[in-house]
Amino acid sequence: MSESKITEDEIEKLYQRLNREAEAGGYHLNPDVEFTKDLISGILTNQKRYGYWSCPCRLASGVKKDDLDIVCPCDYRDPDLTEYGACYCALYVSEETLKGQKTVGSIPERRPPAEEQSRSKPQFATTSNLPLPVWRCKVCGYLCARESPPEVCPICKAKKDRFSKFI
Image (cartoon, rainbow, N blue to C red):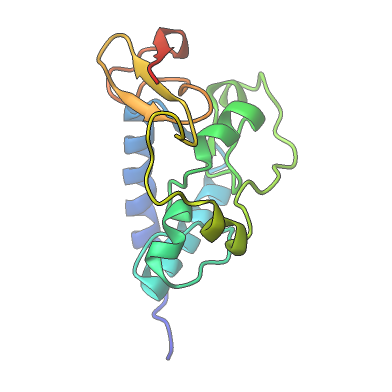
């Protein structure tokens, strides 16, 4: 089965869309436009190959339900941005990285091996066994479950210090 070639027009359209959506949500695409467009080409290739936007830097299984954690933007983006200044594939960068206040180095893989993923998923969650704390934006009420609050609320754009632990 031969894959159709990704066109420059397709890459440019998705680049513009992702850049617009990222900035509107308080995120930033990598300022190296050529590098970023190469990553976008990989996302589009995976879209044509698998039917979903799997991360261009990770090996997808081709089964969407098994790869939901690596559908772009992946589940690991925000913790990577907070800790390293860029996500694993460096499509997204933190504001500090964008401004040159933080240098990005090697980013370790956070995704657990497949066998650990299937073992670690709880059948159901209660407040006592949630795998992550839940954070609430004090401005708009946005809730998110993750290790730490986002740098910027994707709804109202409030900064990290406006979040409190909800659960």
